[in-house]
Image (cartoon, rainbow, N blue to C red; front, side, top):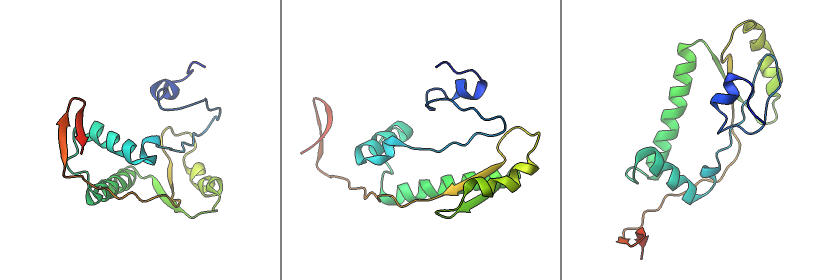
Length: 138
């Protein structure tokens, strides 16, 4: 289905399906590359250009930096950030903030929902060498 609005056209390569809601859009993010070690390494290389800094501490630092950036952006723009607990109704949390956003375009609330997930341990193999297909482990 062809996108019919600016938001859908802009994010068309990242968003699957369509949305039909007059006053808000809820985006639930799922990052497939983050589900495997190889996917994360590929993502890091695309982002940084190489494996430099790809360590457990490097990933933790990036996660913390991203969270601080998002919260700082929200504070600067007067947007509430709510850390929702498991089982909490996100639509109920949003209702009070939605009333204050009536008639305004843009982000009016950020709900952070954390769920248990695998924790990856990054291991570097010192015995890498260059082969016909690029870097190969012995």
